[in-house]
Image (cartoon, rainbow, N blue to C red):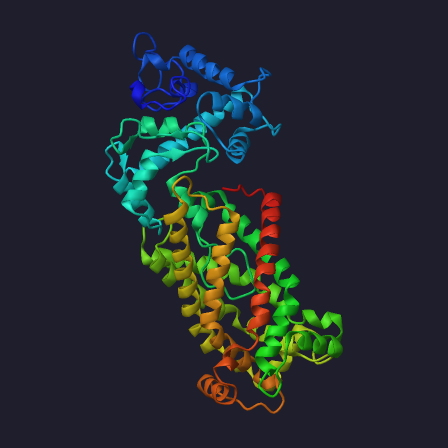
Length: 520
């Protein structure tokens, strides 16, 4: 590779790999090693002695304290001397990726192994971006790759990604991946820039930004999580689901009093009975004690597992039916597949939704438990009672999922347009904020349907209440309470969102560590 096109770390870093892309550390002289036919690429330069010399030279340059191992401090100082400035988080990722004996540092063997694995990943990424298959990446290919993943950027932004990447702190030096100003990146430039950098590349943008519903706020989230081919093949997907289910169970339990208050306000609050938050809590405690605040939470937690499993399986089958060859669906495909999967999952567990509402509204001593409640409904109202409110529940899926995804995509693209010049990683707080705002907007749009659903589910539990249809309930609420009546219970519903997301995130991250899920 010409000197003008090498990274700031050349020739040491660039010399780690043969120009053909084969890791020198993996090369071993073959039968024709003499002359020019040595290693796996057929070049004499791949001979074991040459590869070992270059790798050891790089290792020694990075081993600042000369103790035979690379710690985060060694990498920070050593890479800085080579002109490569990395954040502490980046360096931690490098060490964790190669640290096989978990001693917090890399010995020479671990360092070589890391470079081999990392180069393979970089090669796969380069090929996925090289749409024209001409050995170069240009701005149009970056735009197209991101568009396929549901991320929209302008060609000017893509050119910035190609031309100028600032590394480390904002006052640090600027590294140019495109060395000769051609606005294209070949394999050598791509490899040299990323060789001693954790895999923070363009295809991972969608993994950072995929609209995760794993942070459960207790609502009927209708768009399932997507998992990569690697996550599905390695079995990481079920660990994510288990961690998400556990996090949902904890967050729902912690916010159950607010959820029960919401149900009570949806069913009982009116102009003549203007139930407030403090008054509602007081009424619940006076009627059944402190434990009554958690009525209905048991069934609410139990339905997490079957709903998540059915939704995931249905989503995967619908993706195959759609026939897309994209690993991640585009937004309109995800809306369609997610809504259908949500409808299938909700149809399967809907009787549990009715039970949850009835258990939340029950008076002290009315039922001995969930089974008693189910038997009581079945004997007095028949099987059809378990599907009361089913129609407004299904109708609420489309506005919730559509607005939720649309707002999330808008916020995502706005952030990328403004801040994604140096990095595609938005950070935890930006992702949680975008998810919370989009979910809130989706709830606002579908809340009237959710309220009507809850009232229909509760009809027989309210003494003397007439059996009315969805249309009749809408007319009755608008006539007696006005448009505001369609949003009864909205305040406690929104009050629980931030604590639910926060609790869910903390529990989810800890469960992921326990289950051995690798963070991206």
